[in-house]
Length: 364
Image (cartoon, rainbow, N blue to C red; front, side):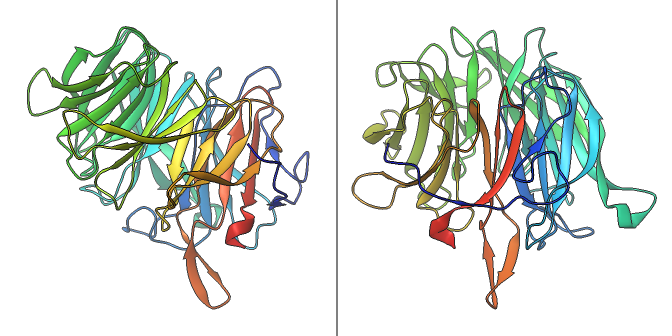
């Protein structure tokens, strides 16, 4: 990876370090996930409203989930609420589907899936808080990852014993629809095919990248790739506009680009070494050729997949520990008379319990 690109850090204000936001318990590592988007308007859908924006993150080894808000221009983060939970491995907002209000799905260390919504406080000026809607015990092992079906009618969970679990979401009630042993080791990645939601991709510590047909019960294997990844598969995401393009990230430090036109035998098109295990990859909300990657020991990177070869556009290495959580700001910001999405980035790291908000230079 090239030299660190100088980025403009967006933090300021009355926090312990004006350039970041830390949790108060120094002994507990920060979560492997962060979600960042515009607050929904009353009776509106997630991501449609301008700032103020919401940042939600959790701690994998503690019992808290945190929600912050910020305004643009950014002068700091305001902590709105702490939610007592068990250790949080993954959190993800529901897409704009059947639910009128956004729901936050949480995969936790007790083997449970929990759903939260945004509820107004008694004093509306204080903003909204996360409130648990329902939860369901799905396994005696840990739930490591979660993904929403595009219609928001169900979620899929990856379990530490190698199993995969489908849960139906119906009127804020959860019901296990099917569960099967999909891998030999921990399942770190589950991802619905956005364009063909009957297909589900999974990745695991067994180095396998699998695809399942959910129309069968239990789900049938469509393909199993056990040769391309030299270490565990950490994350899987699909290009929001290109139906045939899929990305995987691995502990082996490579970002891989796949052509899934042939669902029975995907083609590994190209790859890029990011210098650290690729734990999270998130597409820019409006520019589908750019992704944000959390690269564990090598900070964060913005990568372009537009040209013949994928390339790093810029890097961000201001965190002091494992780079784990990353997301783009999805709400719109009015700047220079234009409404733009994805101007800001939220990133968080593990042992230093650090959350940062920053702006990539190529978007300035």
